[in-house]
Length: 163
Length: 157
Image (cartoon, rainbow over all chains, first blue to last red; front, side, top):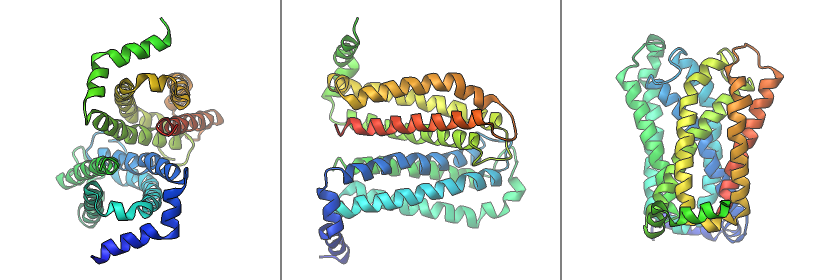
């Protein structure tokens, strides 16, 4: 048995995991927070992505939009991470074998790399293209990657329940 | 024609039949509903937090709203269309579901509110948010959050 599977089984059998799974309301309540939290995380980051694509808020500097939007996205991320981890906690031993869950984790890893690359490269010179009529292709590529990956994460997340 | 007969008609319509027979139909449409939720919720949040004076403090409301409105309305159309398709799979169950009834009432209120007072607040281009626009934002946030909660509850009741 792999270490990961062992860990998942241990989480699954732990008192917290068991109590979330066995209570009538805890799981649906956390799940509701997780579903509505999508708006705070993905809803806000998409606005920044659309700005990077030059589709909306063109007259606002990119760095301004990022500064206004990203704190909300981070709050959304915290809400999603905590609620998502609690859901996983209660189902860990099943999630381990779930193909949709595995795909979701890979996509989450990729979606984390995207802003890392973006901030270390093209965003460093944002002052040069803050109000450019056409944003640099790297910024547009990062936006398309973000929109695609987050959509994939929502789809994979929903699919977890179908396996 | 009673409201009940609309639901019966919907369940017997070609869309309803396809949804009831297909294996993946419900799952796929539900995903569309979720993706549209991200866009709708995101735009509502940004517009209302702007009206409340939490974000975009130095930008004009009207300029933000002008760009976000098409996304809001577009995603609302997707929400309603995918929502009708979801209902068509189990129309009668929805008709008798209290959470569904509450959601429809709240949705009606939210749409009426948006096209009247909320839009009026979004058109104003002032520097500091007035109490009127703050109230409009709070009502809008409360309505859309309740719609989300009621929607989630449909499957649980």
